[in-house]
Amino acid sequence: MLPCSAGCRRGWGSEVDLYSGPINKLIEELAALPGIGNKSAQRLAFYIIGMSKPRVQQLSLAITQARENVHYCSVCQNLTDSDICPVCRDAKRDHSTIMVVENPRDLAAYEKTGRYEGVYHVLHGAISPMLGIGPSDIRLKELMERLGKEDIREVIIATNSSLEGETTAMYISRLIKPAGIKVTRIASGVPVGGDLEYIDEVTLLRALEGRTEL
Image (cartoon, rainbow, N blue to C red; front, side, top):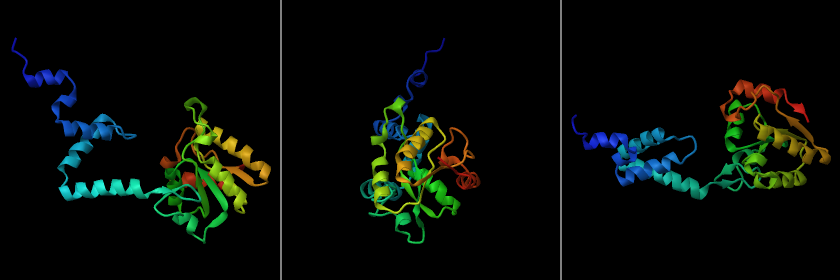
């Protein structure tokens, strides 16, 4: 039997042995991002290494500036680089109607429809007792403070059709209804367990137009 070469021995071991320390570190950091597996992290790492130094510097600067300058809108809690986000600043929108969403990606999904004329409130999560996430862990306090200050006619709850999303919707409804504000829930056109950010615009519009009062 022929002796196994070093390359053969590496084939039986960890892939990280094939790369230098800086490459391993880059792959490790990329793989830690949500939705990025090890193989995707490797592809991204090799792509970044193959980029020109000016492009790498631009990417690094964009990440740093986004982390340093982006924060929560003081009104709706959406991500913005100013005190108040563009949606909240828009005087043409219906500020008496608030759509409550779980995260900025859901907000972006509804904005793509170009048909919703109200404003938003971003919770940055959903109530999940199984994960130890309670009402105080999401931006519910900010929503209630906002309802006490502004003249709100309707709150549309557009949390996802998951167990956590439904739990959050019912909790918010129970909080708001005693104040006499109309509370509605987007229709079941959105599939159970589906995330709003992945739903097409037509389905989102039908879910909005078919909303029911809670």
